[in-house]
Image (cartoon, rainbow, N blue to C red; front, side, top):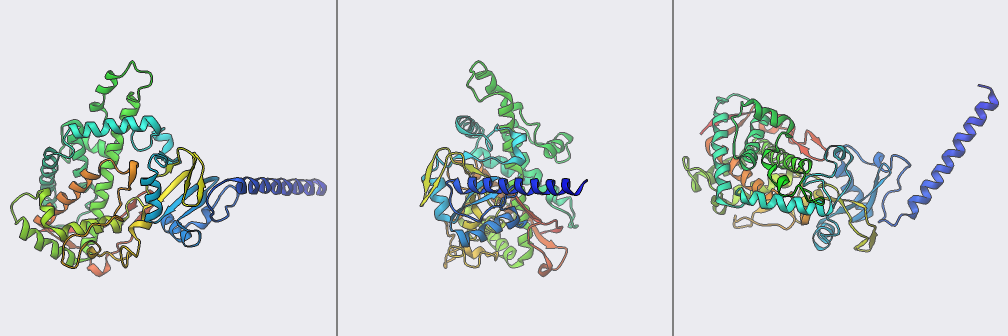
Length: 434
């Protein structure tokens, strides 16, 4: 290339970049959004965030306050930090902040269908239908507890097969909650070695049989949300949420109990006093087991399973605190900021069941306990998840003593990965019969 041509090319590139930068800054400054760090063109604020995004977002709040804006690429996102900001948005303005924000990693898969990633009237209808269906199948009734109790006994059978040898609990703990959802939707549970069941665990998508009927209720209604794809996605949502979240929390819980043997000892003492060695645990036992209940709450608080919830979207122009937030803005409610609030939970980085115990040893509730989020977009299966966590954990510890394959002081409890979900590191344990 001739020198004059190279010089011209470089000049054109520089001028183009300066024009682009000027337009970007004009567009950025013209947006009516809460303050935040100045974004770069194209990458936004991504260079200011490390791999632990929730931790980075919490740190930015120290400078920009409880309501601020960051850019993921060119997309602005309003971040809510702390209990007050989340309550004002998700409870006090629940309808306005009840939209589902755009999430590129799942948008191509869900395409706005199902319960979790749908919007507007479609979401209202499919959520209402899902709640009604789950209640008809026993959610909140004695029958659902019996399903969980039954599955806990099958889980015990599988755990006994480990013969006190080291094993990775990931697969077995995934089977149990998945079978509970299967029994609700399909009126059928599966053996843990069933090929169909294993396939369902792998893909969590072949789960639409029970949801076919409403499509023939409403097939002639052009405005109906009850089409095959939407109901299939709703079924997949139930399996995803009902399997992965519970099994991951339970698995992380076992790791934490291995790390702190004194916690296991106290749970064993409470189980022996309230339930004994032979009676099947019941959800009513929670009332007499404040320490175990505190441990379960502390596991969920400490694990911080969904650090910044799922993205919300503002459905109309609104005001939050002193800031204007326009319609269509994506909002990230930082659940981490509430679950680790040092004023509510002293030394929040420490695993301490005392966070949920009064001085007299009774269980202490907290408004800051929101691992299932709050408001209209809170987790649909919160009640089932709490029941499963209690009955599965208590059944395991009623029958076994957890033993680590390494010294408890060497156990690493830092997450294996953190993104949309917080996942524990891989580990093995031994189950010694009591």
